[in-house]
Amino acid sequence: MQEIKASDGVKGNIFLRLFHAPASSLRENLAIELLSVQNHWMNFPPDFIRNLAAAKSVAVLTGAGVSAESGVPTFRDAQSGLWAKYNPEDLATPDAFRRDPRLVWEWYAWRRQLVAKAKPNPAHLALAEMEKLFPQFRLITQNVDGLHQSAGSRNVIELHGNITRTKCFNEGTVVSSWKETGEVPPKCPNCGGLLRPDVVWFEEPMPEAEMELAARATATCDIFFSIGTSTVVFPAAALPSEAKRSGATVVEINPQPTPFTAQADFVFTGTAGIVLPKLLAQIKSSRP
Ligand code: OAD
Image (cartoon, rainbow, N blue to C red; front, top):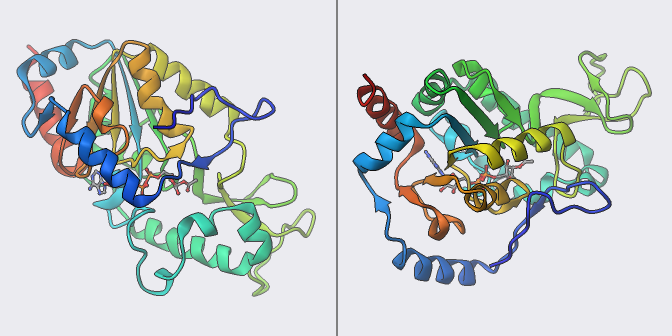
């Protein structure tokens, strides 16, 4: 299986990219690898809970699955209604925006209105509670919906930006207000360029400060959780393997297997909204 390190880059920058594998070969690999996964638990092993409760430093990587139970559809699930015929990876690139800025703006406007209505779910709330239980707790998210912060998480590293912010496509500067003239997308009040969401698209460089923080959290944690992410979008997808290489115990929480599953020390098969509150309750009850 292809492996790309978080530190891999092109000309000093790290770019967002998708791990491409033919769906059939990915499924076959996963089927084989899953057979060899020993620690596939529906319940939490007592040793694991004891180690977790005593951990000094915890890092968590979250993906779209964590927001699924808030009604925000994941990226690789079927898109609903109007957007069913589009592939999200074809909409989330600078080329797609250059080709058809209106289409890309409207797709994000649709996601933005879903996000505006969404509330944090029990997974977000449990992670916000967990943050208070450990001396060091870093939450690295690929999600752009801000739901971790709404749930009360403070230490959030946003790897892919935030959909509620808008920036100028030419200048890259964040723009907080503009004149509504009915044009789609609207224009930058400073340079007249097109406005776009402040998220990282495929083929774009990753934000350096956030990557640095995420790499440090990954390399220094005792326990690393990979939750609700398909681990096919790099560089975030490399973080669980990096954590393992650095000696952390790595835990995956996902109702479906992923390309990382076979490497995980523990796999808790279930939705984040069910598994995380149970985990939180067990950590609390195992402490004096
Ligand atoms: P994906 O849509 O690729 O994967 C979602 C994962 O969540 C899958 O592995 C599902 O099995 C799992 N899942 C679904 N429901 C779940 C639930 N209730 N609880 C836990 N897990 C659940 O989303 P990401 O891995 O986040 O980038 O995708 C990574 C990036 O690719 C995104 O940040 C986005 C993208 O296209 C940008 O927008 C820049």
